[in-house]
Image (cartoon, rainbow, N blue to C red):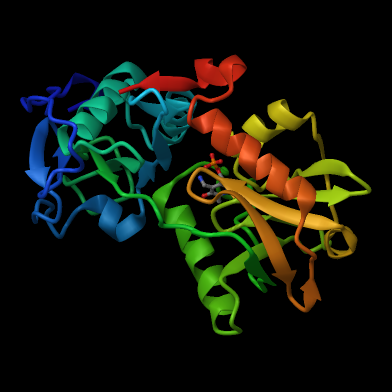
Length: 308
Ligand code: PMP
């Protein structure tokens, strides 16, 4: 079964906009089911091998009373690239429609949106042809990753998955690498891990890209093993920052460091190992510009919003 041919579901969008529903649902293979309902066989391939691909997307309540998803096509196109690697045929227009339906059904406005496509059952082997294909979309209230500002970063001893071994896409199994790094630095009291390669070049965090400010100039950290973040690309367009390779020493010398991602938005770094950064003016300005953009308050950027 191709995920592009599944039914779009039978739920009726709620019209009463009085806040999220009491029992939120998620959409799975054409049906709305309560979040948390047991619905997967324990032999699911993705559970054993990480053979799935997901996205992290956000929607925002806009000041005109609406709800808008930020850069939905870009997120789903990245998901489609990951899905192709796994032999999953993902129809962007279909998933986009499902995302909007789940948001409306749950009456979520400020939300974190999680679509996931995965390989199901049919074999325990590593050839994927015979396996069932699945898709789910969940929405939830945000606050998952680096919620709040002033992040404390620890340098991980783990290396980021090299792009020559695993493409920097949102493939489920790849996130074990992030989880190990996060656990490792958490044991030293840090809330987020920074990956650095064997040559001392900065890669990214476990779920966010890195920027620095030096002498008032904004630099986006570039590395082939890092995810091509949609927030990073948004900030490059908004600020005209330069994208280039950055060594850890340079980051430690920078005036300001901030990280960015869909869940993290733009979050200033207060500390990197034992280096403290003063409260950053540039990072704060970029964070506030980003907040205006995602909520539709920057007229030149409204083409990035998909209205739910
Ligand atoms: N790097 C990694 C490893 C991530 O998981 C994320 C979150 N998707 C990011 C960077 C930031 O990407 P985006 O801005 O597209 O959310």
